[in-house]
Amino acid sequence: MKQFNNLEELANWLRSCGIDTGIWGTGQYKTIANLWEEYESGEVSFEEDPPLRNVSVVQILVRRGSMVLLEIEQAFANGERRFRHQLPSEKIKANETTVDAAYRGLQEELGLRGDQISLKSTEGEREEIIIDSPSYPGLSTRYMMQKVVACVDGLPVEDFWRDNRAFSQGDPVQQHLWGWRKQV
Image (cartoon, rainbow, N blue to C red; front, side, top):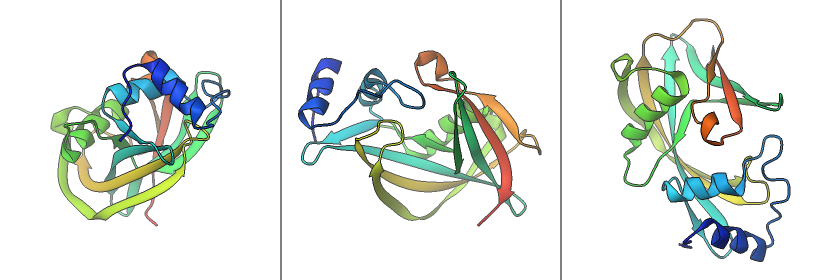
């Protein structure tokens, strides 16, 4: 694993690896400072050769009859939107369990209280994919995902927006649109 002592070391490493960060911090993209915060909080780690960002993620399957809860889109402060069609998910921090991250994610992303959430089980094997990061273009990212099944109370039946609580801390996503869709 590649270790860094400060943001400048991370930025220099990215440049030395040929990763162009020129468009980071514009539009839908996060900044190098956001990446540093992810690293400092233990949400991500890095491998050196080839350069790779590692992220462990819990995906939360919330059902309502034959429907599942999905993040439909994200709205950015600059008015841009990114369509998602993804299960609620949360990065797992260092020294945090999958269950802890699922509770935290449902509370942060959907504004639920702990007493409105009941986690039932993990579902299936872990899935691993490597893609170019949608938040940090040019940086390959390995997502290691585990699903958790949850029952929740207090969510609207119709599509609904929730403010992103991390927006004030520099996350470019201002709001999330959630909705119930047929499970595929």
